[in-house]
Length: 161
Length: 161
Length: 161
Image (cartoon, rainbow over all chains, first blue to last red; front, side, top):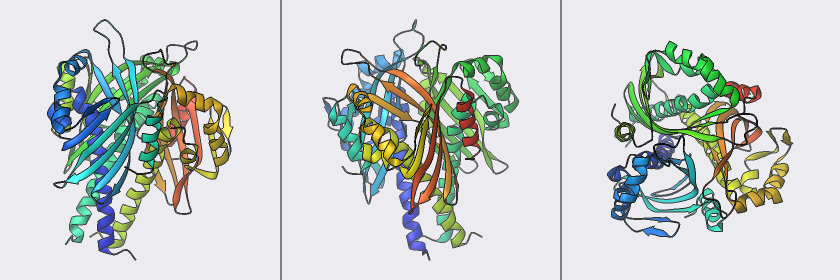
């Protein structure tokens, strides 16, 4: 016998996983549109984005990165931050997610097609804050043989932060 | 306290989102198999597919595109329409979804590997018709710096048609 | 009127689909980390992985492939097995899923970026064994015009094994 309380908890878990998958699926469209507000709000106010030697330490830092001239130039040439389906593990008001991504760039108006600039491993530690899932720490390492990238994937699959 | 009616509504929302994600995830496999029936039935009978200056105005138009010699040639050489995870917003019998995609092509039997021909932003407006989600309008613009592509992403993330 | 038993069955279906999507989304991160244990356990003990003329016939065979020098070399150079969102059809304790994937490789420390080595169609037949979804047979064919790849996609979309 399933009672109603148990069923509510199972539905809530599905909703949490859906909310986190949706958050992560929003990142690429937001940064490729150059929409700094939409991308930055995925992070907690004090959230971290640690990407291959560059550490942003707040939502404001992420906003500044997407508002930068370097990023605007990338968007103007044409770029695609393509994140794959994520594996999410929820534990109360905390969660871990792991996925891989490709970043594709167009080298100019006369170039046909795109080149794959990066292929990257991502580990997300998330927290439910004010009833909304937010990124506490996103750690990203290029898949170039770097063992740190492999560790991110392995611990993400194990659901550990 | 959660009552049963509220829980039923939450489960139905998860099912709607699942059905729409499944519909969008079916598109790539259908067109890469050259299966015009499977791809065209994702659209409403009067559904629109507006893609970079080419506007198909019915399910029959989509069917004709996938049955065309040009598309058959692409399938015979080897192509991959790779759509990423989508962000879905359901509102009753209407919904909006946004995602990005890559199209990869193989240039011939002697060429090793694939090139990325296009990276594209997609906005889907969907309707529940005869108890089945169908595409009312799909709008697709290449990510080449075109502000229209960015607008599609931004309005899709906001859940607006 | 929805009664509780019917609702439980609908939630269970969503959970089954979630479990299978999660299993398939785990494959890329596991093999790109060179984590043979995590990848091999996605297969049933007697599960099959049939990929373009190479047929592995057990979980142990999959483990051996990922532990091989050839695979380790690929991981050390940098590779990304990027599987897209899957279309899942559950029928009791059996299920079918279909998706496409890209495999990207880095050709060496002095090469900037990645090339797309393969674009592949995948059909998964899964079974619930000991309360856990496991791969009974995964069949993968490169999208190079081979009609077998198209058949995999078409039968996967139809939910047939």
